[in-house]
Length: 253
Image 1 (cartoon, rainbow, N blue to C red):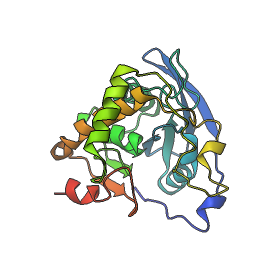
Image 2: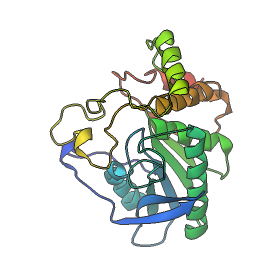
Image 3: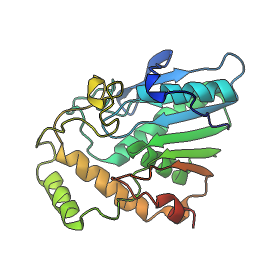
């Protein structure tokens, strides 16, 4: 698969997927955003967003992949994020394994629909960790895995004490809203790319149960590096503050 090169000023792109739909999987109506090629479909790219996000921001990347590779690109909104709603609190993650099972169930329906053999996974942050685990589960013979700063190992400067405290609070009061996030650092302060300006992003208060769920999942992923056999491409920022910026080096050993 050809990876598109960004041309010009990325911040000017305000692309949206041309199509949206809902797929019922595991008792939840999951919103998907997707784009199909004009001709024959040669493969499928399944994209998963990061914590608190939704599928929409991946539209530009997806469009370039569709045009250059004649693939269908599908972005998924995880339960309680974007337009995928349940009876639970918006932004709440009880267990990341639930999202993992949801993603595999949705992808199964997409593979049946499009009858494709070449399947690529892509994910940002938490979505990258879920894509990582899907590749290890190997439910399908995945052709490749693309991860953007995947949450599969914490930054080496992260405090072990604070991590234990966060997990304990998440266990004790999982749905208690603790404090305002004050916006996300994902897009920093650029006026055209402010995370909190997108109404489909979760920008509410910190939910400790969600933090605990993600931390537990990261701990599991860190023990599974040797199990990854799918070809992968990883993008990591040099000033990454959440996950280990040297992750790609160790994963390749």
